[in-house]
Image (cartoon, rainbow, N blue to C red; front, side, top):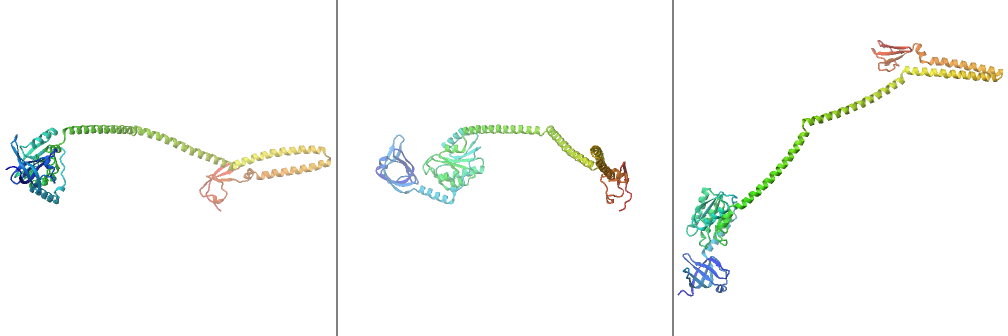
Amino acid sequence: MLQGFKLKGEISNFTHHRSGHLYFALKDENSQVRAIMFQGHAKSLNFKPKDGDKVTVTGNISIYAPQGTYSIQVTSMQADGAGELYLKYLELKEKLKNLGWFDKEKRTLPKYPKRIGVITSPTGAVIQDITNTVNRRYRLTEIILYPALVQGPGSSKSIAKQIEQANKDNNVDVLIVGRGGGSIEDLWGFNELLTITAIYNSKIPIITAVGHETDDTISDLVSDLRAPTPTAAAEMATPNTTDLVDSLKDIKDNITFKVKNLLNKHQTTLVYLTERLEKSGPLNKLNDYNVKLNNLNKFLNNYYQQIINTNLNKVNNLKLKVSSLSPKNKLTNNLQKLDQFKVNLNKNYYYIIDKEKDRLNKYTDKHERLYLRLLENKDQKLNSLQEILKRVNPLSIMQRGFTITKNKDNKILSSIKDVNLDEEIEITFHDGLANAKILNKKE
């Protein structure tokens, strides 16, 4: 009776073993049965079975005696359309995608969480795996369990309620929502809208860890981060103590290096400022000012000495010029020239007399008379020249009452227009000087 029958149902928990055998469960709304299709029969399939496919199988009932479990040994399989649950999955997934729920900006996980909330079954292995992993990696955080049904009727409502409660408590930094592996029916609570909406509206970042790495739920697409396993979720939520120690060591080394560089920099700056302070100190400034003052004194002394020497040269030149223009000096020079002229004249006179006498002695009386006449002419001419010299002699002129008049600037006054009332003047006579004051003038 249990050989070669046909059975219609939905594939769940499908596994294609590397040996080529197919392992799966065949189910409907009320029950399920295990099934196996060996490699020889699987090669004849014209499609690739997967979870959610509705199929009609032909097979025999077999029993696994060690465990006392029954299964169907499938000899042939025909596709009978997509499974009902899988269709619901695709329909809800497409709807939420169109609403943009999958494009929501993901929240950033805290780097060093103080408390981690875990929403899962309190009796499952998930909470133990997460606790062990957190204690191994980061003991500074606390794990708070929010117990929930994660399988079967009411699981979606239970999960959503605990997510909302965690947000209301606001006592954790990150939430891990998950369970172990299972069939699509076992994981269906994470594909229902209540769970998905609670994850979407959560203010606390959520990591989903549902089933195995190959299991996909809509909750994974809405959460902030998807972990392949609960252990991986714990690793994502916590830093590694070893990494933290290494990071702290690197930070310490970096700080030590930067502090040393900063100290060296400030030490160099301090040395520079000390030298600058010494150079700009009052004593150094005073010494600099003394040096500048001495240099300025030398410069001023040299400058004014040059000016004085230049002016002295000008004064001496003016004195020489005035001296050369002085009537007295001119008069003295002329007198000297006159005396010299007299000496020369006397010399010439006696020289001529002697010479003429010699000539007279040699010539006849006629020549002697001629010579005497010539001598008389010469003598008259000499007397005449002497009279002329007397007349042009300045002293002789001044002896007749002529004087030289100068103002206080030593300027010779040659016109009444050069004379001012109440002006003091100097009058030079042939034998002395006199000072006078102009009381009146008439042009």
